[in-house]
Structures are given as structure tokens and as C-alpha cells.
Image (cartoon, rainbow, N blue to C red; front, top):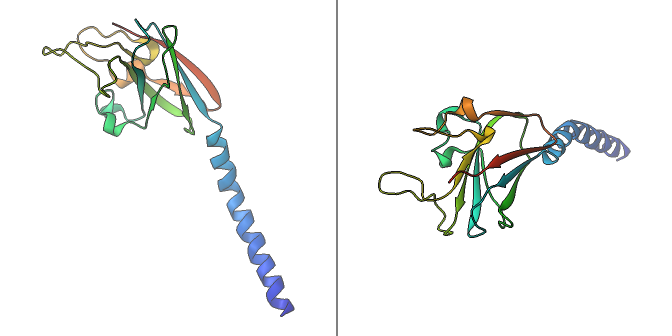
Length: 153
């Protein structure tokens, strides 16, 4: 009986040792926070929404392929903040919009012109079409990292 107890203790010790690196890595990702500061809103109505991409071909139009999406709880004094937590270091690009009427989508005119505010990481200002991933891409190094973007109307 004593032999079984020693074997069980060894198995438990081995299992804990094997799990420790995975837990530490997961814990490190939990501390990673990309803080998106959005300013320049024309009013405090509605919500601010951002899509975080790490897939260049999906950026910026395929929200269903976004790495993560986030929404600010409120807009105050023409400012909002959206935190993306638990993301690994890497190259990302953001597209955000001001959902003024809270209908859950980016509204455009019949001609495809934006009716609501929008912005891209690196404060890229598009001319005739949306920027590509490389123009908007930034390196997220991990930890607590802020990024500031100004809305375009």
C-alpha cells in the first residue's frame, strides 16, 4: 500500500511540473493588454467598436475573420477606450468605427460613402479606398501597450 502512495505522489509531482510552463505562459498572456485610445468623436452618442486583425487578407472588411473585436462601454468627452486582453505579441492592424445609432453596423450611403466615423491604426487616412494591412500594421510587444487613433468623419 505504501508503494502505491509513493507512486501516486510521483505522478502528481510530474503532472504539476508538466503543467507549470503552460500555466505560466497562459498567465503571461492574461497580463497582455493592448489599450486602444480613440478620440475625435463628433458626439457622445452610440458606441465605439474596434476589430483587431492579424490576418492581412482579411483586413479591414472581413470582421468575421478578425482576431478579436471590442466595444467601448461608453463615449465621453469625444473619447473612448477599448482594451484587448490576453493577446500574444505579434503584428496587428485595427479598424474602428463610431456606431452613432447603436445599430451594430457601420452605416454607409447608397454610394458606399461612410455615414459614421471610422479610423485605422497608425492614423492612416484613406484616399479612395481602405488602407491595406501593411499600412495600418503595428507591432504589439506584449505587456500593457497603448495605441492612440483619431476618428475620421
